[in-house]
Image 1 (cartoon, one colour):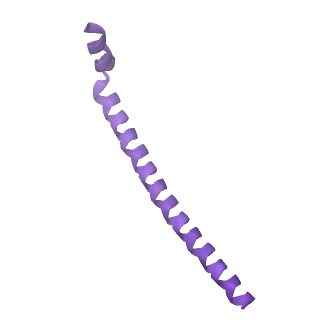
Image 2 (cartoon, rainbow, N blue to C red; image 1 turned 60 degrees about the vertical axis):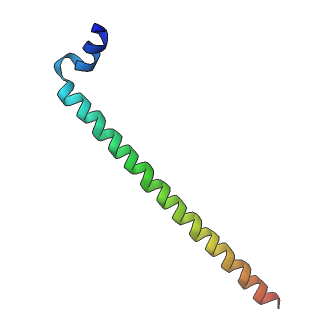
Image 3 (cartoon, one colour; image 1 turned 180 degrees about the vertical axis):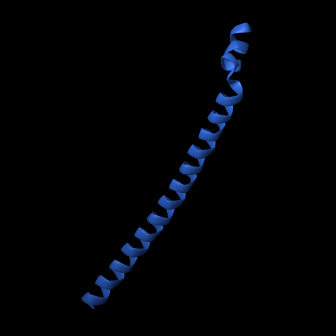
Length: 62
């Protein structure tokens, strides 16, 4: 148990280390969420463009 307490206290720097880890975790999660949202938006735009392109080709053939 002493090893765990020693690790968690980070040699007396726990007040600086753990908030830094927390901040990094929040930033990484925010980046993942923003990236996923942009991916979904881009995929939707691509589907929309592909659908319009197919409609244009159908009009040209007729």
